[in-house]
Length: 319
Length: 319
Image 1 (spheres, rainbow over the protein chains, first blue to last red):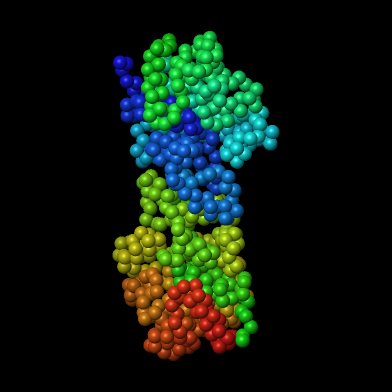
Image 2: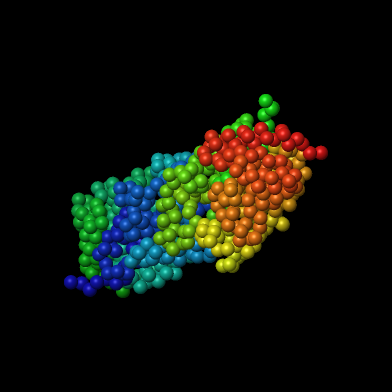
């Protein structure tokens, strides 16, 4: 039996990130997990900053999540949004009433001078979450998509347009100027395992890694670094990744995703059925653990997390 | 049959103000009614401006009101407030989810540069209200109470402390510096009838009349000006008026209220049972219409409004 890992960092965004976080939280000792979260999906609605990736992780780890849809609060109502509709406001972004409670609180605390990192940690603590949750940066980084319908903000394309307009190019506005969260940098340099969640690389992990100091810290880490494929049989478990890669003319499949992380990961969890990907990834110098990577429910996520933790020591550490 | 009144102004605040507004809206031709509303109860919660008197009138006239309690939206939920409680925020002010929708929208529009008057008119229009609703001023006027527990903001005393701490003095902070709404001033000078709602004089109408230009416009009007007693048998229909007058050592009863409006009203509607008040008020030079002044439901409010409108021509106009 390996000694338990005490400092695990998960890089995460989206529903896949939240499910992996839940699996790791269940598999690891209390307070061993730090989740560093993408902020590229953040946007402002009616003057309120909304952080969908942070919120999905907060709701998932506090068991508030609507498990059917993977985001939002279970059994939430939409009385506030209905009034906003009556008042003529655009309401394509589905914000529930409990959701609004969090957004109101976050904006209130930030108007008093708290940083996004501070309010996120405060919320996690109030929600009784035993993992640490850190935004990648306290500065705005915004994913924008140049599409056949023009340049769209992420949520506008993702929710408003249901991912339909073909994408020509993706930009992470603000990433060059953004400072990495110092707590996130410290967590990466202290980590004894770094995990890349099965999140969308283009929309979740690359906006996060586009903050230069974060990418450099991951590249410089001596800890084993393991990714989990977001694709099974070339198809996204959830979300538009396969379509996006095709739109952009970029390599698909688990091997395509692993190649994007070259120099940043040492191992990759791939679905057992993806033979060709497994061969290609190992040929590229990344070790593969092949298994059933679909997280159907929290026990399934925990099972995958335990396999991932067991895979880590086989990768050794780098000089 | 008198010709219908075309320009009626109601000075209003609180639940009594909203009920009188509803009665007048039903009794008068469409668009004949302008309600000028107290803003002294307004306060900021979690960074959001909340305008309880304006909102109660908006909800009542759009038939959204919770008729059981007289304020708030019928069948509203409190999922947002429950999250704010979980996050450690003070939640003694009962703000429902539909309520939050309006507050979010108002703050968003005002952050874009709209005035309180503009957002109030926009909301009334979106809610399908055929009366005009105007805040007394776009500037902050805040009712504060010097109590046995120190100086309290209005909502803190009214909701947070349930009106319990004895009141020594009432202040309308900001009233001296506040500019009257130009639209409200124009409505008063154009009015062919001015009505003082059966609102709390200390907490609703006097903060409104403490804006000097508004008081002067009412004093200068040639139209008949009619008040409605908020007290029946010396007791408030709703709210703390009788207790407040006693705390402050000021005259109670319908006659006590009528005397506060001396020089501003020509007639007063008093409950038929309040014989002594009727005699005292008429002795003071204010004509009385004695009737059943309790507005039990919207048809009852309409009946009272029709009596009030019928009483107006008997008062004549002043030189």
